[in-house]
Length: 240
Picture 1: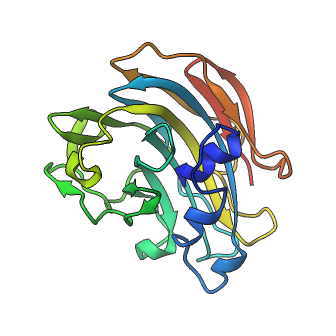
Picture 2: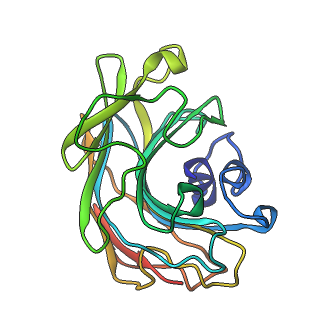
């Protein structure tokens, strides 16, 4: 998940190292053997939130039913320990191998769980756990306002995490990210996005701040997951 992704990118912080936080989130009988790969970007700036347009897909998991493949937007405090995330995931823990909308949060480096544990649903059009449409792109967003971290999908607020979860100490982002993630114990078979390498995360925006230069990251040892062309607010990613 997010904590690991920034640690992989080399952002100086004291949080958990790659693989450790996310390992408890994967499904399947061989979860201890699951390895993680990330392709993404992060932006170090104080902001009220972030959003990006993510490509939605129904990636193949190899072996089936183990691990996950996802894309997301996340905001974090400077020390990596406080995080809010929104995105889509394909994970057999969701009950099928179709893409689902998800939310997730971390408090003091501890994951609260998918779609629960402090999250408050307010919208009627979309909710965490809903299927999203593969083959199209959608805007995912997070915004701090009125004592809450609001989650939005396609420009509509769907719910929030209250600041009280963090005792009011996480009220702005210091680091914001957009990335794809694969967790699998197969060799390289699980697809990131849809397996192609020309899928685009685009139109990344910081809220209440000027978007600085991005730092991009991709695995060095697993070239099958890679970043393609990229610019200040967009990049191509994918592979299997």
